[in-house]
Length: 593
Image (cartoon, rainbow, N blue to C red; front, top):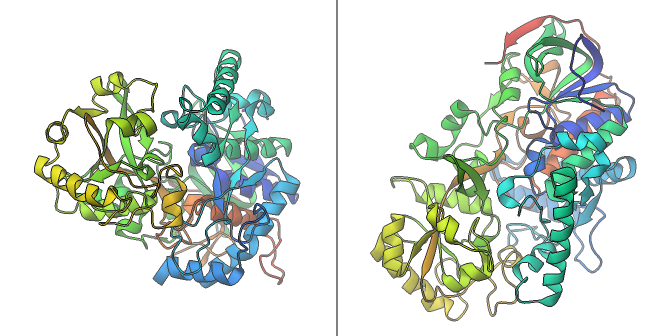
């Protein structure tokens, strides 16, 4: 459905503000159950943070496990969640998630264009009570974006820094291994050659890659399902005010691309799905420890995610708790800044390089501070804590020549792609010796030399004596299985040496609006704000400020979006019947701050 400009007032049953997985799953579910739904999106493209993501959902108990993988159990999932959320364990929310998640997956696959494939991801904390070595994470199936027709131009493109000339890689190791082995394997060279030729043809015809994967595929599949149901997605349309009468929230005043304001009345409810607050400078300064210390933060999430949902909710007296202070405030992602010309930078998330043997991470002191092969969130949390008292919150990933040519380092690609441009731009730092590298990078030379000497003593035998790299299933999953005896550990060998400076970023925020299980927004007295709902990252995470597995954002976001969509249609979460939210009249309330 085309992005027709809003020229007159609209009436609908449900208004969804935001077009990521949380918002679109709510919209689709409500529409499939007979409601008239409208979606508005502030950005000119739809897809939200989902379109930038890995497209993985963590759903214990789903029915898509590959043959031969260990069976999961409900009791194990409960044990794991209780352990991982600690003092923030919410039994009712966890039970609702575990009960409904598998049902949600089956329903979307049966009723919509959304399809999933299994993955082999272990739980990130694979040695914790109740963890499983494989099976709880599923991945959005790849998609041909031409299925969107002319709407393909409005799909948010993937994050440029993690594509190769716009070509996407699947989150699966199976896809990436061919690109790492392109100079060493005939079959991999053939695979990569076919991918490149197909992609170049697509660029010539469509000015973008059309064989999309990961979160971009999930966003496209959700949007296609919306269009098939006649749900309009009005991009370039920002919600500026909520409409309210004595009975509750009844709609919103929105502003379109041409600056015109228009009323949208929603008889059943308004759903906030604006992507949390990763680019709300005031709120992130309040909750991010490294910003409180004057440090830098560079989020690869969409810049339009400025906390609009939380600000809109606050005008109704909604309860917005900062329950996960410090290292639990967000899903941390170590990132580097890639010069792209004219003084501008792209943000590169370090998703893969940290797991590879021969790459270590050090602080300005030259010392290692954590297991580099832990999850991005755990490494980020460790970095925030370790940098307390230092001048900045940053680390440097360091390796030798053989390692960078085999695996790459950050945005720098493996051989045969050249490194010279990234060295000249300052992204890559190079030194003939460790002392020279350290001096150029701003690292303590003696500290770095001592660290490499100490690390290498164990690494020569495949052991990380300081932090135990490679001792968990998750450490090993994204490492190099061909490297023996430890796929995560190799010595730092002969120079020249290379380093990339890494800062703190995030994949989204954990704190958010307090809601009922069904997504109804609660006020400061824990009373429901009638007609107002929150889903996705606008709703407080059920994970207690922790990040225990691949897809712990998208899995709950789609599950609770499904629950909220059904509730809006009058279908209760439990067996007891519940009335659908009543229609209201409209009046304006306060502006978004």
